[in-house]
Amino acid sequence: MYTALLVFQVIICIVLVGLILIQKGQGADIGAVFGGGGSQTVFGARGAGNFLSHTTAVIGAVFFLNSLGLAYLSDHSSSTVSGIALPSKVPVTTAVPVVAAPTQSVAATVGPATGAVPSASAGKTPVKP
Image (spheres, rainbow, N blue to C red):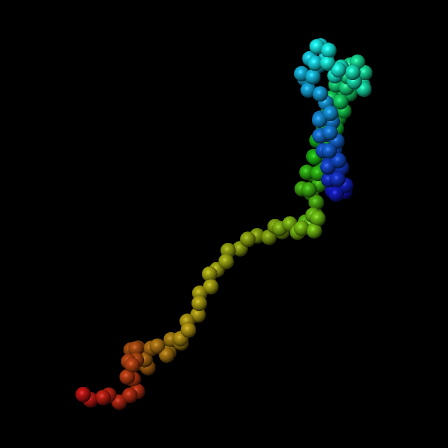
């Protein structure tokens, strides 16, 4: 349904642009006063102004209603539209920072029961000078 309305919207756009480009501007009638050949039209002596302006208004109204329909369908559609998954409404949780584990054990850096840090010459006999 959504795809069909989208294709219909593109067709309406092309038709609407074509209708607007076919219409003559407001100053186009002044050329007929001075003998211009622009007064001879396919739609008769009155010209195509009324027919084209009414058709443009009708196509514009259809474009407006189709745009509203597309907006309604896009808001009330399922969670996947044309293969793209929309984000789900899951509550966001805050992440707890991870603290790195110590690389050495506490027992290796602290001496036996005294709590003193072992010296570099621990376990060696002292050298006398």
